[in-house]
Image 1 (cartoon, rainbow, N blue to C red):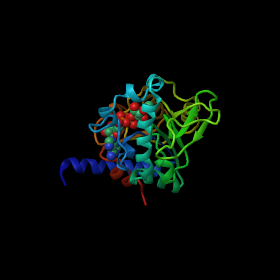
Image 2: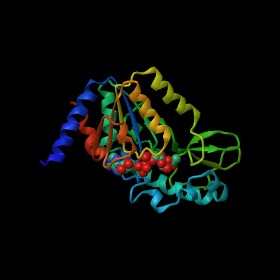
Image 3: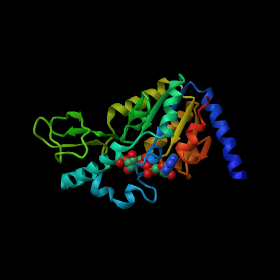
Image 4: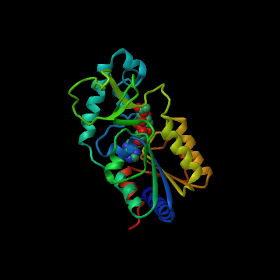
Length: 250
Ligand code: OAD
């Protein structure tokens, strides 16, 4: 074992101790937690934003210009995600909950692999790829058809439905934001695990910062360094599917 892996092992041991002591865990997850389930991330070298311009697929203006083009892109992503299964990282977080800890997950992911793994408290801050929304009557429906038989899918009112996800330039949905804010105020978070995110958005940094201000130990899990390293008490460099199971005690 070289020195670097020795250091990582020690850091993982520290992380496992902190997690073992914790009653309340907040996990902030991003695309990296689902990477090992075969779902592409956004900003890695083979990420979605390297191949597709977000201005063409992930803004309200793009949708207004060409809803069919945007929907085809989402239809392809949905079809890929429908085949994906939770990986050991999702399962490790669910296992912590089964062990009796409260594990509050704030995910930027639009997949539902945390729920499939068995986690019960999951806040989707960027929406869900399995929900569609009518911009005329505001209704939101679950839609799991892959591939879609009609693009765009239609609401009962006859209007088109859009993906119920957050696009660039849009506000975050109010209810999940309130849920995160209340959680940060009402629950004493012992450990904040930040897994597989580039933390490109200020609110992610703010929430992790707030958890730390309230006394949480911040543990980051990522193969490379990110803007969160400065906020981290323990930066564990590696893949989520490898590191997270090692943070769970038997
Ligand atoms: P990014 O693609 O920006 O970042 C993914 C992060 O995961 C990077 O820091 C990678 O190093 C890390 N990563 C890759 N493989 C990993 C693995 N196996 N284990 C652990 N980490 C790994 O994705 P997000 O930070 O989630 O928003 O991006 C946030 C938001 O930006 C997305 O929700 C999406 C995107 O634009 C919208 O579409 C609104």
